Length: 151
Image: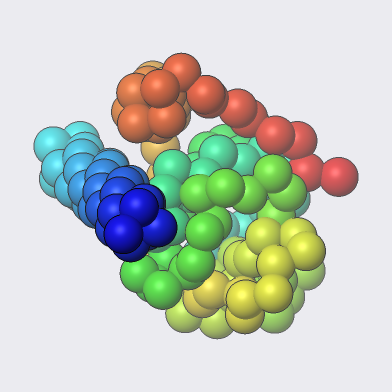
């Protein structure tokens, strides 16, 4: 009887944590979608030239990237880009060297067993917009905000 109660308690705790995680992901995604609309960001098809030096995964569908020239972009990905938000390093797979293209190029976590995710949108962002996305990211991660360098 005690074992059954313990199993039920553990199951309830785990399901609560899972539901909370989903809510946080949805809230972050919704905030980023509102940000794109409120900031009137305009999608582009190509970034050229571009060499990735920094990134910040906002959630599993959005990542900001910065190039050597210090220009920043918000990239959108399919909803199925599993656990990108936990990325410490990423690979950018491009069909053409130093060019990033929508619907052709892909991004993935280094060491990830999942397939790379196709880039579905590119939005140029200013430093101020980058900082605002960083704030949204920091708030959603309770202060854990990093800007890993790509090596």
